[in-house]
Image (cartoon, rainbow, N blue to C red; front, side):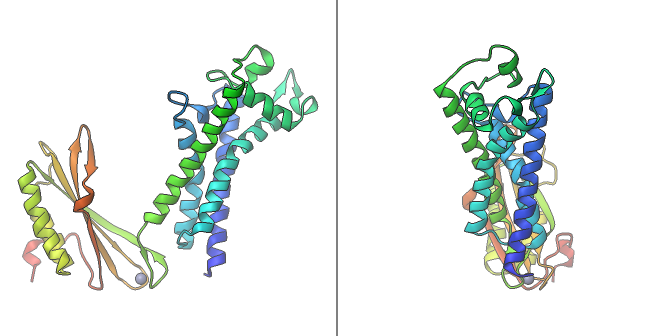
Length: 285
Ligand SMILES: [Zn+2]
């Protein structure tokens, strides 16, 4: 498949999920009065818009994976444009389907005026319907700022998906995304134990003995997470075109109920030889 075809498939999938997301959000707002995308923390952190922007941009991820399309600046500009346009698309869908007392509002107001009115009268807690049926909260200029924050939120959501697509491992020789073969997780109760294992495993990886590094990893630490403060992860992927394998080691530190990756300890490498996750150390030559 050539690059224009790949980029078209990716764009069509992404624009499709953007329209679907906008339709769903405006339907929820018209039906139940909840503008989910406008959920904001402290007025300036648009959690709802970032989330909506990510959901809308999922199509770009699906399309890129299906077409094996490596993202480029042209995809970046498409994502930024459609993410920002989503705000206006939602307003336009609401304008098209909103009715007051059985009459479509299109009969009494232009889209431009509707947009200006809804933005200037943005209510933070109530549905837009209330503006036409009762007194809404008038926030004037702050409404434009609030709308601007939403647009930025949608774009940030889209950029997060773009970042994820860019981080997916790719075989440059075949032009294919790698397929995950599996992962192996081990837990450690002390920093010393984890450091010793990391040094050993990374030593093998640096000597290009990737299968050995996975086998050694399998014998380190514990399989059970009880009492652990560190964990290590071996991830193996392969290219279905040339059979090339990719192995990645990461270490994580426990932080509350979450695990936080330790970026300095991350290491990955490609190999021509296959790497299996489920071999045992007794099978080691
Ligand atoms: Zn390949």
